[in-house]
Image 1 (cartoon, rainbow, N blue to C red):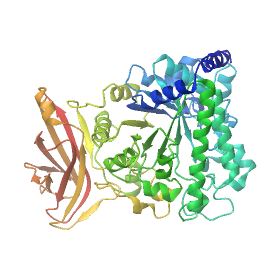
Image 2 (image 1 turned 135 degrees about the horizontal axis):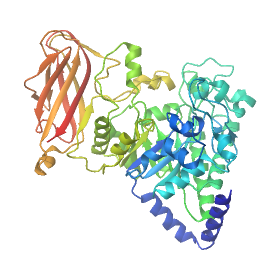
Image 3 (image 1 turned 60 degrees about the vertical axis):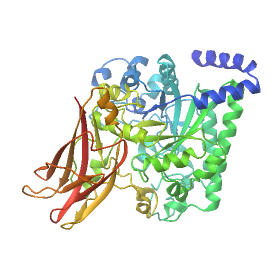
Image 4 (image 1 turned 90 degrees about the vertical axis):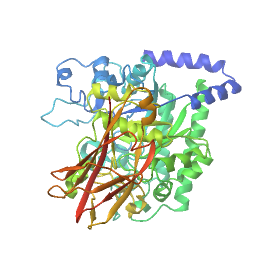
Length: 531
């Protein structure tokens, strides 16, 4: 509380000297500040304290031990923004001063040394959002609230995650008294003013009571807003207008409170990467960007619907920066469910650098790293220690498809949502059956300028791998940019080609895989290493 009082005093003194002109200048500076890497903290460092750190479970809870669970991974890295998630199900928070309900329920499994430590830290006068903010300040990083609008984990764990707001107002849930075709039955229906009013109150609580640099309105975790959509339809024009007005309300609120404190809030949103898909579920991105309710946009997540280049270009037309959300790949979950096959390596460091390089080569202004906080801290630091504007000369792995599974698919949140899947690639969960002589064509986005790396004395070697169900020694023909790769070898269904740096160029590379016989195409990757 002492920290809060001191912060408020500083804000009041600064506000007294902050004129309208100086506030607008500060706002422009804040919006235009270079941010390349946004790192999201899942918030389970409080509800599952001390997650995967049995050594800390034996020690008294402390601020530093809280930081060691997740936040420490960003120390001495190029991460510009820490997005701290304090939302555990709609209306349940780990932050203490939001105006919503604080979740103190036990989350841990009986055989794990985890516990919900909200009350434990509160007894010490500590709040999760405050501790994350202090950590960010000490480490020279910005702090954003990552506010999940309709996190629906409470659908699977209602006993510990269904908020008092929903329990006291069951009619606000999309599945209450209705048969639904998609979304989670406990998701909140934003068509109801009771829901929007509650969210306005909580956003105001965060803005007034925490020293935030910005807020990310996270509509991807999870992308569900209206009962209309949950029942199998599309959002109506009225519902689209309702959400646009709610975003205008948040912008007006940020202006009001920002001027009072003498420092602006930066506002962004994380949404699916397809404008058409967003509109169908209730998000009119064109209207939002025209109305300037957001300072930048984060697109994508556990599924990607459009090529990054197409989405970035459309967002940039509004003069707004666009960031690719690169989430932990859960493709293996869907591969297992569909009895598919996949090549290893999608959560390796080299793959993450490949994904980042490909997003930047597609015109993105930066990346949002989501749900990687569970990886080894040294691996996270390695990923975030590089200047992502120039990753030439660093080993990477590129895949034709990175994400799409684990219960997070387009059709999970929009009936018929698979129709919006416009990306080409090779999806190991949904393999392509090819007759003899047939071909599968897709683009592989490459993030390396191999000619520039060569001039720096770094010679590239590229290993292309194609996973099929072919037996024996016959390999598929692979063409990159119209030229067939030579010297392929086949073992256990994996065809391997070693090629030089002239094969791929930075950006989209057209790839053809031609079947030598009837076959199933499961997966495709290209690993680039430098000597």
